[in-house]
Length: 640
Image (cartoon, rainbow, N blue to C red; front, top):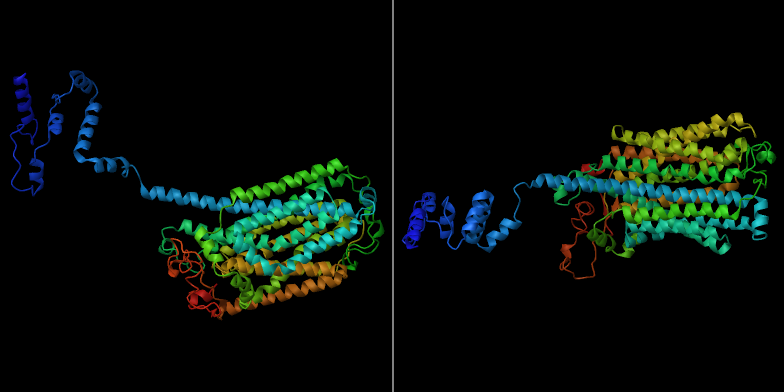
């Protein structure tokens, strides 16, 4: 046995260039100073045994040796274990959790931001789908409700002396009058709840309006209509802000290697314009389909109970088109040849309720947040008094003042096509059963022609707006001179063509204004104020249309032509002043005032407001007091 150990030690001394006799090695007088000296350092016992091809470690059974001969990989595992014992626990941990040799950091980064971009696209599609479902349900239910309540037999048989006509007037008053006060509370709602949750709350109020129709009484219909009026401007302001923010986030994820993105600074002027054009176009393509979907209850349900063409316009005589006064005077009071069963009405309303609930779920589950959590904290921390005042202060900007006529006309034209044109021209000439087809032509045309706004990627931005204005002007002049003959179905192609052309102009108008506002106001701290102003003026215009319902048609057309001419001229003047680089005034955004002393806000300068993603405040220089106005400091800010 002693001889075997002696031979084993001798073979270990010959087993490699660094081998030595066991127990005979003495450490050098100084540490190795070169690579050769380091390699000449003797291995330990474990290494010595591993380096011998046929060697057996001390304490190892012969069966283990045979297993290693059969499985060479086992030898490597044993060698790694021995090397790990030599390196210590820190080296073992580093070997376990360290970077893998096949890990490509750049490729993983690209995959991460690709997922982020797909998430942004998902948010845009979800918001567009929710808006389409919400307005499909709202417009379809309101139209069906007004037609049923108009029928004299339905009122007498179903509700006797409940005075449904008076209830309908108050419902319309609640929807059209309440938004007048929206400028006072909309910015506070958006800053308090956040953009996404304001959308969710508003969509929920629309669902509440649908549920109130299960039990048609004064105390259910009128309060829900007032709630709809309260929610209209917050819904549209939050939608406009949300789509614009998604365009800015997509730019950040697509250009994540840019220095200003990594340092969370303001993007260059016009950098996000391409994505704003694309995302607003997608939104309005989807939204305008709501005018098509809103006609489904009438097509598949209500048309089965409506008298055909020869009965309905019997009392209209010569009061169609430009000769009419008010809303289709002389129309028969009975439009239903049989009354729908209550069970069928409940089924239709349940389908609409399910669609409204689906819209709520889409916003809740599929729409991501528009801002980071710290950004939302900073946006609401500027003070509720400042949030209340800032919409009024922004109207001192001459760019917004020049766009106000376009905002007003935008409210005029959408209600004109749905009310005055469809009834005084379409129903008078074709009958009530063709009303759905007329609005479907308008909706399909508006949805398809919204894609024409993509020409702003190649052409100057004023072309779509002015083209839509000129198209509407030509149609208004035509309608001013034309009075269709009652009960003449041969005029249907011309009426459908006018509805489709009006839809084209409406698409260019709506999409162009939203894109223009996103281009002019890229600061994420201002966008909710800007879209609130836009939709508030639009709501005011709808209120004016509600007030002038009894005017002659020629007076209505004249007022619309006047508003359209003023809008086009004012917009052209604004673009001219911008081309001349006339300075505009913007109110300074106040600094956030955080009342907590958390780990992020130990000092006042730690707030994200100074460099919040580099977008909102780097241009505003919020160190200045809020009452001072901001004027652009360089030429790029004047070139929108």
